[in-house]
Length: 243
Image (cartoon, rainbow, N blue to C red; front, side, top):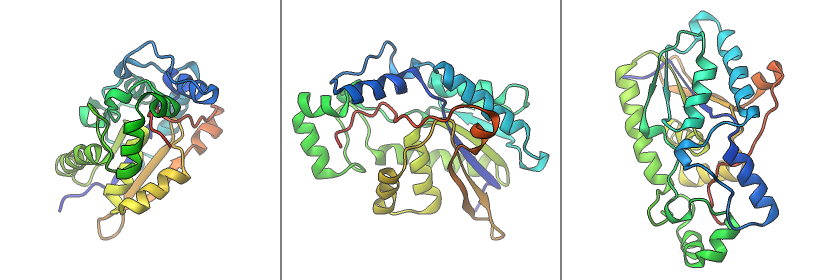
């Protein structure tokens, strides 16, 4: 079976919605103060500096370790992260809608508190079904996102057999790529989501072993941000799920 030599995913830099969501959750608000649709949320100034720092890390990789192609979520925050990080590297970039963030349907723009207050029946349904299978009306479950990522991985393996591929996306995608690439169970995946918050511009990567199978090499790593003097942040995505 075709396989990649290396695969990385970088979560986008801090966005204005990350900052707004953190403030709303901290204050106990029901609504997140958003001025853009999800696809158009820009990076914050901190997020732009994180993206540039990621670019300096990429430029410093040995020739034989640099990505040969980048595939990017069409959402603005991920596109802008990729543009800043890839500037001057010569790495070609393409967009793929299968890397977009999870769609939240009627829960979009609500905090966890807002979901419990405005849609208590959905909070209860999510509790019954569990985070992995719960699909908000008009939105996607984690399994829905896994299905689109599964097809993307198949295409990458076919089109870039033996190649080095860099993805730019969102926090749920980082977790779900671990689920798919490493063959995790639902229980193992959900344990990861409880134990970790995916940092902005963090790097998660896999490298092929001697048998040609991708093995985890780094997870949620922000050492490059520290080295480049950029401030790491770990704001949750705007996910509006009761906890």
